[in-house]
Image (tube, rainbow, N blue to C red; front, side, top):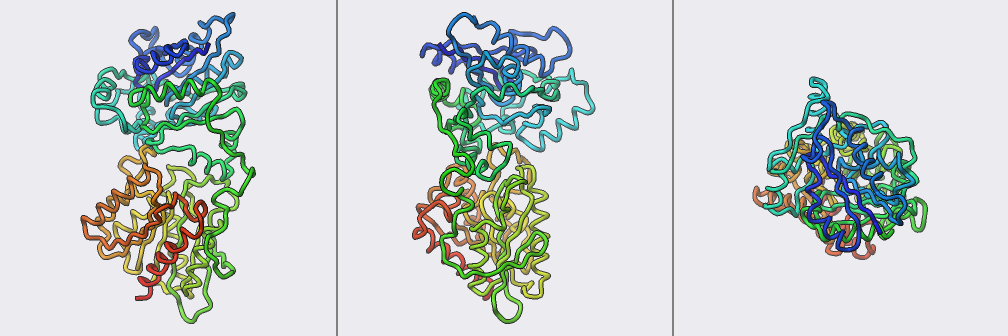
Length: 506
C-alpha cells in the first residue's frame, strides 16, 4: 500500500486536497493531508513563533504516525511552498520515504529560505523589504480573489473553486518564508518525481533543454531515479483537475513517468545541432561580448543584430554566440551583404531581464560604432525568451532601427515567471511601435502557453495598425531550426531574411 502525505502551498491547508484525496483512497492508498501549524484551523499555534522548522515538525509527525511494521511505502507530496517542509522532513527520515513528489514547485537548496521561491519578483522584493521592518512572528495576509495569479497561474480553476480557495485562505506565518531550509544531503538518495503544470509556464521539454545546457544544479534531474509528469493546467491542479492529479500521483508512486536524457547521451542537444541552411564560412571578429561577421563588400554595411533567448545558465559552454544557429544566422546575413552580429547577454535567470536589456543595448552601440557598420541602418532579431527584450525597442524605436524581427518569441511573461508590473511586455509595447516594420516567424506547433503570447501580440499589432509581417512555419516547433526537417524550415528563413534585408536597404 502507498501512503500519500501531502503538504499544501502558502495560505492553504489540508482542505485543498479534498477532491484529490478520495480518489487516491478509492485506488487503495492511504492519504494524509498534513495540517500545518498556524495555517490550518485544526492545528492552532501553541507559541508566537512559527517558522519552517515548525512545519517540518508537522510533516515528521505525519511520517512517524505511519506504522513501520506494515508494508507501506510513504510518498511525500509538496505543492509550492509545501516542498520546503517536505524536503526538511524527508532529509531527516530518508529511510522511511519511498518518493518525494515536487508538485509545480522549484528545487529548494540548503540554506535558502522559501521567500526566494515566491514567483512574483515584485512581490518577493516587497516581502523582503517588509520582513526587515517587522517581527518574524508577523503574518502575511492571504491574497484577495484577484491576487492569486501572483502566486501561480489560476488557469483551469472554476469560479466556484476560486471563491472557495479565497474564502478558506489563511494568513501565512512570516517565519515560514524567512527561515532558511537546512538539509544534510540525506534526501538526495530518495527517488523523486517532478509534476509540472504546463500552464504555469514549465514543461518537460523546457527542463530537458535546461539540462542540455549543462547547469550543474540541473544535471541531477537526468538521474534514473527522477521521473516527470505534465498536467495541462495552472498551479492548482488539486482544484482544476483533481482526477488527473490523482492518476499522476498513483503512477508516480509506481515509479512511472518520463525520464530526461543525460547530458552527452545520444544526439547533440538541440542548441548544438547544425544550422539548416548552407551558408558560406566566414570568420568572426570578436569585440568584448559581441561577434561581427563582416561581408566582403565596399563601404559601411547595414547590420543585423541577433539576440539569443534564455534563460541560459551562467556556466553554459559554448556560450550562445557560438551556437550553430546564431552563427548560421549571422553568416546568412553576411551572405546577403549585411554585417551579422551575435552577442552574449546575461539572461541567466528570469530575474535577469533588466541586465540583459543593458547588455543588448551595449552590444548594439558597440556594433554601430564599428566603421564597417552603417550606424543608421540596423535591424534587431530576437529569439525565444529573448522576445521579451523587444519591449524597449518597440516602445520607443530609434531612427536607426529599420526593422525588428523575432523567431518563435515569447511576447509576454509566462504565468509562473513572476513579472507582474514588468516593462518587458511586447504584446503591449507593440502599440507604440509606429512605423517600425516587424517580421515575426511564427511556429505552427508552438507550445500553447507561448502561442497565446504571440497571438496577443498579433491582435494588438493589427488593432493599432503596426507594420507586422507574419512568416509562418506551419509544422515548426519552438526552436524549429534544430528540431524540424530542414526542408520545412528553409523557405521561411529565406523569406524572413529577405524581408529584413529589404527594410535595411530600401
